[in-house]
Each structure stands twice: as C-alpha cells, then as structure tokens.
Image 1 (cartoon, helix red, strand yellow):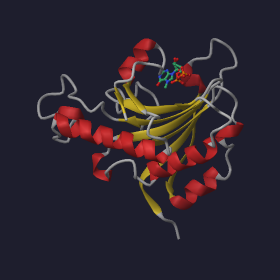
Image 2: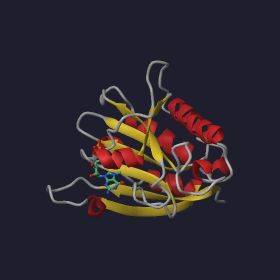
Image 3: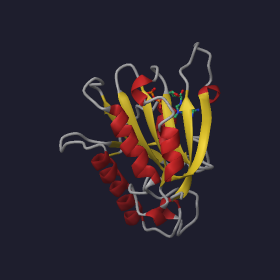
Length: 206
Ligand code: M7G
C-alpha cells in the first residue's frame, strides 16, 4: 500500500563548484520525483545526510514542475523564509532538514488550498547551515497583473496575502523549534537577485 502525497515533489542537488567558472545552472542537478510517503522514505534512506555534504552543497525539495531558481516563472514574484544556524556543531541539521521536508510534503506549512509553498532548501556553507521555504508571492500586490490579482491571484485581498505569508513563517519557525528570540526572515527573490546573493535585507521577521 502506498500513501499518496497531495503533490508530487522533486529532489534537486547543487553540487559544490569545482572551479570559479562554474555556472549556477550547471551545478544544479535534478535527482528524483516521488508521490508517496513510502517513496520519500526510500529516497531519504539512500541519500547522504546534510551533515555529510561538502561545503557549498544544497538540497532542494520542490513541487514537481518548479525549478528551485529565482528565474522560474512560479518563483519570480516570490521570496523565501529562512534561518541560518551559525553554530554548526550545536545543531542537529539532519533532523531539522527531515522535519522541514516532512512539513513540506505533508502540507503542514500552509493551508493546502493556498498553494503558496513552492519548496524547501538547505544550504551547507562554511559559516552556517541555512534552511529556507520558498513562497510563490511576497504577500503583496504584484504590479502589472491586473486588478483583483493581488498577492499573485486567487482573488486575495492584500491583507489576506500578507497573513498567509506570515502564517507560513510562523509554522516554519515552529518546525525548526526556534526560541522566542530567534527569528526567521523573509526576503523577496528580486532583492536576492539584485544583491547577487540571498543575503538580502529581510522584509519581514517572525
Ligand atoms: P545562495 O546559495 O542562495 O546563498 O546563493 P549564499 O550566498 O549564502 O551561498 C549563492 C549564489 O548561487 C548566488 O550568488 C548565485 O550566484 C547562485 N544562485 C543561487 N540561487 C538560488 C540562484 C538562482 O535561483 N538563480 C541563479 N541564477 N543563481 C542562483
């Protein structure tokens, strides 16, 4: 018996650059797509845990059909909630990443019909691990999309769009078991793209 997931999910891997000239999209590799709980565990049990990945590696778990890139049409108006774990030795990154993936595929980061979560990502860097949740919108009106098309459509009011986004931030923070004085930060992908990195100014915090 297989327990189907609400969505199909694709696992991606960013392999560390070998030289300076490696382009981002040459390093990004599609690994596998799955649609049941059993397949998820089969894959999970057969891939390297985050704690064993080389520096500059990433795992991305995204809804099927969405590339884990700012440029993807389903991401380009969006952003991400993220948190950096700076004390790498103190954190059980494997467990936190597993819980983050389970929250994504189990659809517990949002109300399913909101369809706001595009995927989750973990970055292995020299000074930190970072876990993020990518969202389809930034909770605001998307200019030029015509009216009634606030927060990426679905007939949402701007207030509702923002509330959905903040709700995802709160659930993500709970998934990471962060304390009251640790904050997850949201930033739009356009800001990230312009600053050349994800270290863009946070727009919201929870
Ligand atoms: P990062 O891994 O998000 O953060 O971006 P980091 O700076 O903490 O390592 C690292 C670099 O990877 C960026 O400066 C870009 O060169 C590249 N990169 C990352 N992402 C998510 C994208 C993307 O979606 N599109 C493109 N074109 N480059 C990206």
